[in-house]
Length: 123
Length: 109
Image (cartoon, rainbow over all chains, first blue to last red; front, side):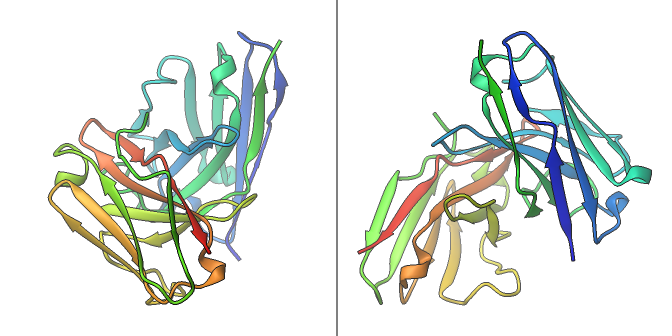
């Protein structure tokens, strides 16, 4: 069974950092690009970042560029999101999602999604 | 405000046909495929339609997608109570990012 389990969320003060992890199982991670998508409470979906199977191509939403860093360790079946200089507007449920394609870009073929990990930025 | 524009709500009665629109521009919908996701409260989104009109295995053929120019639509025929959910359109943007619509809450009356 394909599974994506996100963790690392929590309550953090503005300006601080947090690192999210997404551990996958049931498939070969290096066959797929991966993404982070967030959803603020009661709001819609917002793509955050994506990374190709070999980490050669990476992209970020303008709202997080320069503050967030996506990475992956295929040997550990893991995807990461390092979030620095957090703002109150970063408060959201963060989903990791598998791309059906191996290369990043050109498609929004996210299937499946993990259950999400909640990040709350507040003083 | 999302770059891809969807109506915030839609509704229909059981058995009806409902459509949800998604409007974008030449840099996203106009030049790329459109995708649709279904999300029930408290759960992760699920891929519903890919490449404008393709259904993943397991998605009933009551769900269909179409695209014309810079707009796309999701149609649900034979509406059922279990279709009540949030629906999001998505497309890649030529600026190297993925875009989601603001979402449409579908109510089955």
